[in-house]
Amino acid sequence: MKFVDEISLTVKAGDGGNGAVSFRHDYLNPKAGPDGGNGGNGGHVYFQGDEQVNSFFPLSSKKIWAASNGANGQNQLKTGKNGENIYIKVPLGTIIKLSEEKPAFTKINKELILGEVLFPQQTLLIAKGGRGGWGNAAFASSVNRAPRYAQKGQLGEKFQLKLELKILADIGLLGLPNAGKSTLINALTNTKVKTANFPFTTLNPQLGVLNAGEQKLTIADLPGIIEGANQGKGLGLQFLRHIMRCSLIIYMLDASKNNPQQDLNILEKELANSGIAESQNKQKIIIWNKIDLLSLKKAKELQDKVQYELSDKKHFFISATKKINLDLLSRELFKLNKEVKKSVALTSSPLHKIYDFTVPLDWQIISLKTRYWKLTGSFIENLIQKHHQPEKLIWELKKTNLNEYFQQKGVKDNDVIIINNQEFFWHYE
Image (cartoon, rainbow, N blue to C red):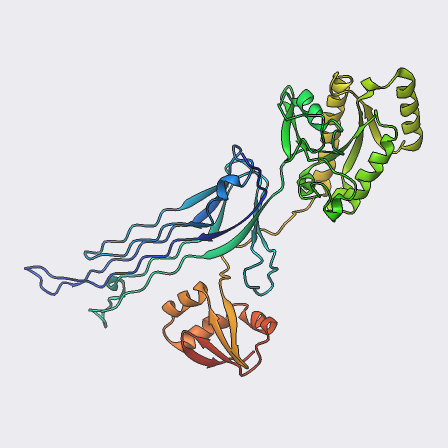
């Protein structure tokens, strides 16, 4: 299955059904009064974490995900059926953002993060369905016994989203092509990642799980990095974002090369120039692989040189193919991961603001000509249905953060605002 870690899509919650206008007539009571039922509520759109999904590829063939609308109300006080909710399954580590194509809102960055899916079955409400409109029976009163009108259903929310995946792994494995990363993961975790003696055998991030009793570690094998990757050479740094959630970073080097320390310098340089600031503060260890290809003398010289020149870093000398020192490495990885996570738990703060779905955001202002503007969006249309009197509509708008939004867009005092073909002079308070 193709690996996809970024995708754009549109979600649309269901519209509420319209209320019904109906009057009951029967033989014994020909003027029994209004009996129009309410419309059903529109369905919501949810995102849900699924351990069995590891990429956005299953979502890539469908650009618009829509919940069903609520049914209209009927006579005899029958309420319309509610629209069905939809649950979009996404891999763990999914970040949900408003798309850059979405108009800017007050105090909202174009890259606003709506939420993150980090746990199995974790469910986020992304778009709320519209409320069903009231039927004419709901408007009956002592002074209006036969209302001949009903309420339209509210529009469901609609958002253009960008999904980004950052793989959930404890350890990120970095190295130049042919350093033996895939071979190491296969040896440690009994997975079957493709290996071969040519560059870029690993084209997508691969995951393996290292088990020790009830403990487990997840290791991410990332495609090989070459010098100049931050400028787009090779596979570039397109997958490097996946190390951002890792507690540990492993630099894996081919010890059989003439100057393996040069490869370490390349990896550190490319990571530093990647623009991923979080990577600089992570715990890093160095694995020198393929020591089985060195003579005892060469191996001793390399270890002495490493201990002298790089004594501030933790090192392991292994052979992934011959499984030399892998037990020692496994024990140390569990120990280091536990220490790092304990430290992070004491100092960490929430990575992202979680979107408050109780705040209506779907509005936009469009410049028609000098000092003339049109205000649109489903939030505005729902307000129009709720407040038929212009004064009440403006009063309701004043309670929102619309002032700051207008100022940001360049609306001035006494500019004309057009709402539903009605013109208003806007005044800042």
